[in-house]
Image (cartoon, rainbow, N blue to C red; front, side, top):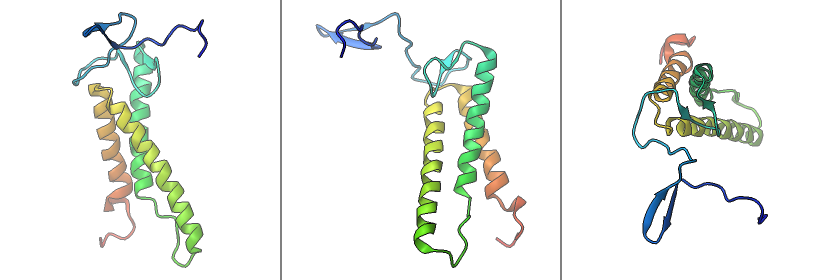
Length: 140
């Protein structure tokens, strides 16, 4: 580490059995709250802008829909190469898990709007991709 580089700020430090809070850092909420001044998924994003907060909510909503899409995606046909099918399904599962973890991390910002966007995204994704409403064979 470069000695001229200042250390990264930490939210909490313990020195001499006393807890100090550094004023330059953003402390994350430990319970649900409402408001657009939040951070989720990336540093300094969405920031304090209403437009960026709305874009962030849409991003989480679409991510949740994609999780449901990949959860219900069946592309491997019967009789195809078994090893290629397993490799392909493993790749799709990895993408689905990555999107699901991103939704989970966004919800861990404890912002009420992000939570509702994630729940609505999963609900819409299930209705469109998982429920029998839009499936061709309705006998399930």
